[in-house]
Image (cartoon, rainbow, N blue to C red; front, side, top):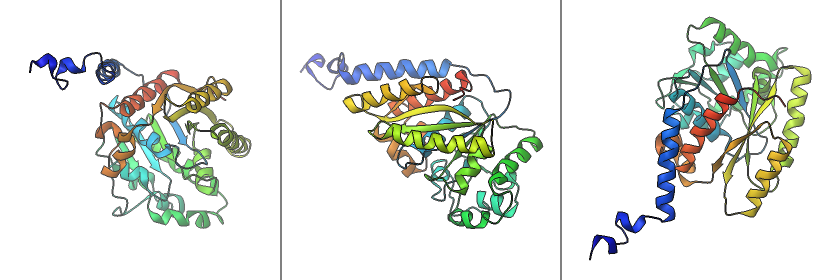
Length: 303
């Protein structure tokens, strides 16, 4: 058999959808590697929130963090979800840590004292969560400054460190309790990942009400700056319709980059990795790196 007759040879792939995708991904990676971003003048503090679970919230927080860290930014992830999935995805065994974000919120421990270096990037640190965080709601309730605990801890850290973080990502539980209120009060921006499904805008509208409430009560400078569409399937008409709908309602906040539904994105956390370090050449990984660069370059969009 001649090589050209072999469907597994390079010639057999030329012009195929797989060859086209590989070529396009190579081009996109080259553009990502060549891209440069400027450090923000002040630390950008993102609360990554959605009251609906399963929308790619934690996946978004950790992969954007790694992507920005790879571009030389100093990045901190604060895991505010008792499940500790962000900690796990960043290579930190949250079952074995001595201190966590719970100790910061409830016990007045310094943020710097519970930070862990993430093996995902030399420029990335994480404040892990443990199951103790599930009891934080009750522990915070009697405190007069309960909604400001995280904000005060972050500001104290920023003012006292010689390595000021450029970006902080706070990963929230999928509910509007004291933990999410603390995150929204501490943040300068809100990033909302939205799964491309039927009730996407309905959930977004509910979250917008919560954000407006926080702006009125404890954080007037909070901006709903970024919406990222996730789990997109280009072959589904509903997914395409959702993208168009969200962009029509939030044209300034919705990123041009869309995160596709891709197996590597779902598999990576099981290996204690982000998809960027698990399957760097995949569509999902490349899309998150493109989204991070877009966020850095577009700055804050108020909404």
